[in-house]
Length: 107
Image (tube, rainbow, N blue to C red):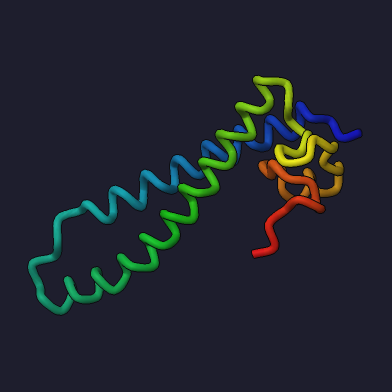
């Protein structure tokens, strides 16, 4: 069985990285617009990918917070759908997953 304390530590570290990155995205998106019209146009083009990355990061952050709550509840490593144990290999790849391989959404 995998050392869950190591997984918890990795989740905490990743959560901090995401929080820092999301704060930088927010700071950049809220920065005053460049007075030059052409430069402002380029800035706006950069905003859309940054917003997409921000949304993706926010979803991952939510999943990590939920995984850390499962640690606190003593249910980490147990599939939230069927109650089976999530394999060590799956947790190594997706430490924040709430699903075993069988119950994981196929999207």
